[in-house]
Length: 318
Image 1 (cartoon, helix red, strand yellow):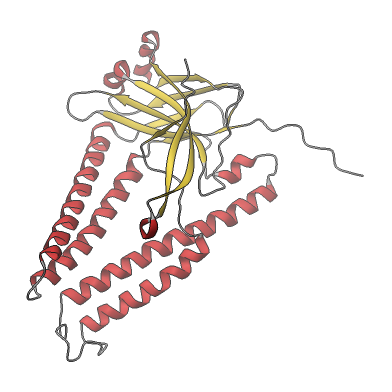
Image 2 (image 1 turned 180 degrees about the vertical axis):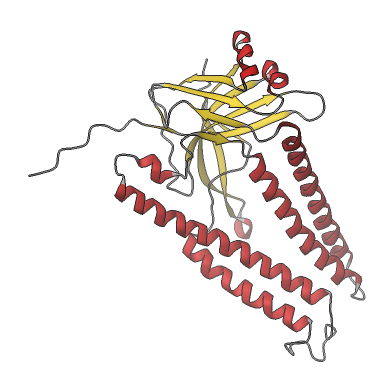
């Protein structure tokens, strides 16, 4: 039976509570400029530190400058990506008004791939950022006299965070090494409310994974909420599950796993909320696959295209 209770769930949100893409691009420019300038000052190209304790410093200033530059570069990338997505959406909506899913998301009409590689790369990049910030902080603490205890604590926390994220990335890369990149092949594109989601799952070591496989199809609605009080108020994106159904694999279908694919079937409710990535708090459907195995468990997450079937086009006047 489907789970119709609305509940907040974990996982990485696909929306963003921050600034629009154009604002992010503008916001990134000072970080890039000041980061580059601080690096140049650290190597004596710019005479900003003359007479200060940081004059001729070749460790702290360059580390701080590189960190600021990386933050600016990441922000610029996010902003430019948002601007490009908005431009693409407007163009495709004008070119293909009867197929809104083509403008909504850069779908591959043939399949959806597990998102573990993207998460692993992001975790690795994040760990490097924390290592850079932690390294700069640690260097500042080590080479500065009469440092407060709180500075040592901050440097230690940053280093621990970097190592923890690096270990998480290692687990993700370990799963990829063990199971490869899991794929969910679509029998049609897209899937429509009130019809059946028909797909096929494939991965390395499929015959070992299939008997223990549990599949969950869920609809996720994200929302932007304000948390905290006073100066600690912040906007965050939360994920709410509004519909879900979990199923195992029919033993009669396991023989098909030898052919490289496990069949995946889910009936979609007639009232299924269509996928919509046009806002900063999107709504979407995903299939989560899990199997408990010795060593690293199999886990995969697939985004699936569920939309409302469009009605007949209105006749043109004249």
